[in-house]
Amino acid sequence: MAFEGLADRLQSTIQKIRGRGKVTEQDVKEMTREVRLALLEADVNFKVVKQLINKIKERAIGQEVMESLTPGQQVIKVVQEELTQLMGGEQSKIATAERPPTVIMMVGLQGAGKTTTTGKLANHLRKKHNRNPLLVAADVYRPAAIDQLETLGKQLSLPVFSMGTEANPVDIANEAIKKAKEEHHDYVIIDTAGRLHVDEKLMDELTQIKTDVKPAEIFLVVDAMTGQDAVNVAESFDSQLDISGVVLTKLDGDTRGGAALSIRAVTGKPIKFVGMGERTDQLEAFHPERMASRILGMGDVLSLIEKAQENVDEKQARDLEEKMRSMSFTFDDFLEQMSQVKKMGPLDDLLDMLPGAGKMKGMKNVQLDEKQLVYVEAIIQSMTRKERQEPSLINASRKKRIAKGSGRSVSEVNRLLKQFEDMKKMMKQMTNMQKGKKKRGMKF
Ligand code: GDP
Image (cartoon, protein in one colour):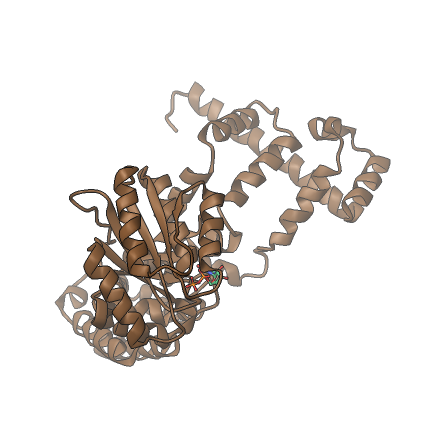
C-alpha cells in the first residue's frame, strides 16, 4: 500500500524512543531530524514538513512530554496528533443541501480517475447513506467518458443523464438538475470535463457550471501517484473554483504518500475520500486519525472492524462458530470462511490495519502469500463432497488424485489435512476449557 517507505522509516525512528523513561532535548532533536528526512523522502512539500517539525519539536520538548511518566510514549502521541492535524483533524462529511437535490461537481484532470470516482461516490451514497443519486455525463471532451459513465451506471443499476458529446456542458448540467427534481433524486453528481493540463477554457466552463448549478460540494479528483504535481493541481483548481474537498485516487498503488500529507496543509481543503482500487466499491471515507495511526504502525482496528461488519455475513459467522464448537466443521465450511475473509480485501492491506503489523510483515515466518490461499482452495475443490465432509476417508490413493486434480503436490495436500486436524483439535481444547470454566462458575 501507499506510505510503505514512510511508515517503515517513521516506525523504526519512533521505536527507538518508545520505551524511554527519560527523553532529552537531544533525543527529540535526533528523532525530529529523522522524521523530517522520512517525510521529505516521501515527497511531502518542504514547507509543510518544516511547519510540522517545528510543532512536534515545540510540543515534544515542552512540559506535556518532559513531565509525563512515559515520555517515550508521549512523544509518539505528539507525532501522531500532529500528523492527524496535518491531514485535517476530524473526518469531513459530505454536505447536504437544504433543498434537494444536493449537487456535487466532480472536477479534475484527465486520467485522475474522475469518471470512475463519480460512479464510486454514487455507489457509496446509495449503499452507505441510502440515497438515490443521478449521475450526469458532462465530460464531452474525453472520448468515451460518456460511454464509460453509462457502463458504470448499468453495472451499478444507477441512472445516468447524458445529452451526447455535442451538447454544451453547462446546458447538460442544468437539464440534469431539472430532471433530478422531476424524478426526486436527492443527489446529483456531475462528471465534468477534464483536460490534460489546467487551462483557462476549462476553468471558465467549470466556473459557469458552478454559477448555474450552485453545487453543495466541488470535489477535486487527484491522482496520488503524481506526488507534488497533485498538490499543484489542487492549488490551481482551488484558487479558481474554491473547491470544497479532495478525492485522492490510486492510494492502493505504490505511491510515497506525500500528496496525501501535503494537500490539506497547502490548500486548506480536506481530503474527503480515497480511492483504493479500480472497483466501484473501492472508495473509502478518509479518516485523518486512522491514517496517522496506520502510518505510525499503531494499526487501524476501527477500519478493520468496519470492513468485517460490511463484508462478513453475521449469521454465517455465527453458524460457523457453532459448527466449530460442535466439531461438525468441514472443508466446505473452511472454503466458505476463506471466501468471507477474501471479501475484506487483500491480506496485506488487512494486516496493515493491525497494530505492529509492519514489524510482523518483515518476519520470515509470517507468510502472506495470496497464492497460498488459491492453492488451498484448489486442493479443497478437488476433493469429493464426501471427502470434504469426512476427511478421514482421504487415504493415500485419494491424496494422489486430489494432488493431481489441483495441480499441487501430495505433501501440500498432507499439510492442509494436518492443519485442518490441528485446527479442529485446538477448537476442541478451547471448547473444553470453556466448559470447564462454566462448570466452575467462572465468567469468560
Ligand atoms: P478520468 O479521465 O479522470 O475520468 O479518469 P478515469 O476515471 O477514466 O480513470 C483513469 C484510470 O485510473 C482508469 O483506468 C481507472 O480504472 C483508474 N483508477 C481510478 N481510480 C483508481 C484507484 O483508486 N485505484 C486504481 N488502482 N486505479 C484507479
